[in-house]
Image (cartoon, rainbow, N blue to C red; front, side, top):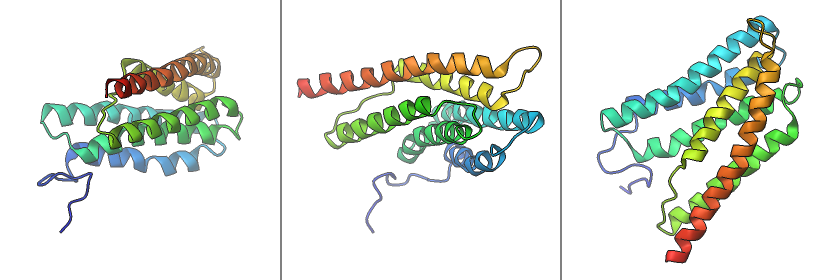
Length: 192
C-alpha cells in the first residue's frame, strides 16, 4: 500500500493536537451561521468562540511539542486551520459592514502568494520556516478580528475602533511578513 505524503510510517493521524486542529476547523461553519446578523449578545458569544478557537492554536502546538507528537499532518493542517478561521471571519464580516473588503483582499492575496511560494520551495527541497514577523501578524490579526466580531462598545471601549486600528497594524505586518517570506525564498534559491 502506498504511503500518503502527509503521513510518515507509523504516524497517527488522530492524535490530540491534530484533533484539536480539526475541531478548530469545525468552528468555521458556526462563524458563517452566527455572523450573518449578530446583535450585541451574539457578537460577544461569537467573539468568545473565536478567541477560544485561537487559543486552541497555542494549545495544539504546545501539546505536540511537549509530548513529541509533531506530525506532518499537523504541520500541514495547523497553518491552514489558522488561515481558514481568520479569513472566514473576515469574509463574513464584509457584508455586515464590520471590515473593509480591500483589507480582506490584501490578507487573502498575501496568504495565497506565501502558501504558493512555500509549496514551490518545498517541492525544491527548501524549507521556508514561519517567521517571527508572520507570527506577530497572526497575533495582531486574531486580536483585530476578535474586536471586530465584538463590534459593540464593551466596558466603555469602542471595540470596532480598536479592531480597525489593530487591523491596519496587522495589514502592515501582513505585507511586510509576505515580503520577508519572498526574500527568504530568494536567498534560498541563490544559495542553490
